[in-house]
Image (cartoon, rainbow over all chains, first blue to last red; front, side, top):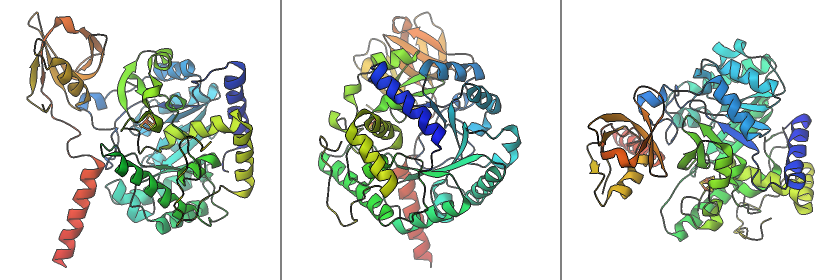
Length: 355
Length: 103
Ligand code: SF4
C-alpha cells in the first residue's frame, strides 16, 4: 500500500481510541473541508460548482477552517472544492493544519500547481491529490477541456521534484474501459506517485430495485476487470478491503459520519454527496442526523447504487480495527494482495454477511 | 409542480411546505417577500425549525422565521440546468453521431 507508516500509526491509534476507549460509534476519520465552490474547470456531472455567482465568490476564512478541523477532530483532512488553489489563503490554511499535525489531502486539478507550488513547504502531513480521470483522452473529456491532462502531468512532476507527497484521485463511471484504466495506472506508477485513489462515480437513480442491482453488478464487473492480475507495482492509497469491496468480494455498509463535510453552509447532512440540510456544529451533525435513513440497507433510493470512497472507506478502516476478521483480512490483503473475483464471476456479496 | 425561474408560492398556499423543499434544492436565487413589505434576495440553502437560512446576494448568512414571510419567488436562473452527468453523456453521444454522419 502507498500510505506511510507514520500516517497508518496515527490513524490506527486514533481509531482504536475512538472504538475501545471512548466507545464512540459515530467517529469521524476524514474531514471533507470544502473552503470554496469556485473552480477553474467545469467538469461534467460535478454537482459542486453549480451555484449563483455570489455563492461561488464566498469562501471559508482561515479561522473558520481551523475551527472546523478542531471541532471535528479527524486525523485526516481532505480539502476538495471547487479548486482549493484558487483560495488566496490556502497556504496559510495548510500551514495551520500542518501545525496541528493533520494529514492533509489537497485535492486539485493541478492547473495552478506549477504556479503556486512555491507557496507550500513539503511535509509528511501534506499530500497533493491530483484529480486524474484517466489517460489524456479520457481525462480531457471528463473535465471538458483539452490540454488539462498535460498540465496535470506537469504539475505532478514539479511537485514530486520538489519533494512533495503526491497521489492521484480518479472517479470511474460505468462505461470506463478497464484496459485503458490499467494503462493509466501504469502511467501514474511510472511517474512515481505515492498512491492512487479510486472511487466509482455516484449516480442517483430513482430506478426500480432491479435496475439499481444491475448498476452495482456492473460496478463489480468493472473493478474485477480492472484489478484482475494487477501490475505488482501499482500502489493504491486505500485500505485493501476497500478494493475488495469495489470488486464485490465483500460488502460494506456506508458510514457517512466517517467523512463529514463542512463548507460555507455549515456541517452538511448526511454526507459529501447528499445535501439534506446543515447544522451549525459538528456535534449537532452527529446527534441530529438520523443515520438509519442512509446506506444500502436503509433502502433509500439515493444510496442504492452508491459505492463511493467517501461513504465506504471509513467502514473498511473500522472493520480492520474493530474485529479480528477485519484485521486478519487486512494483513492478508496487504501482503498477498486483495481478493478479486474473476471478471466472469457472478458473485454478489451478501449485504449482511460481507464483513 | 415544477420549481423554476418565475415560480412563486404564497405562505398561506397549501403547497407552501412542498414548494419550499424544492426551492431549497433549486440551484439558483430566490426573493423572499416579507410581511412588512421588504424583500431579501439570495440563495436559500436550508430550512430548519420553521426558519429559512439564506445567503443574501450581499452580506452574511441570514435566518428568517417563516412567520415573517408572505411569499417566495424563484428569481434566479437554475445554474444546474443541463449540467448533469447524464446530460453530458447524451451531448457527447450526439456529437459523436454527428461526427460519424459527416465522415
Ligand atoms: S450511501 Fe452514498 S449517498 Fe448514501 S449516505 Fe452514504 S455516501 Fe451518501
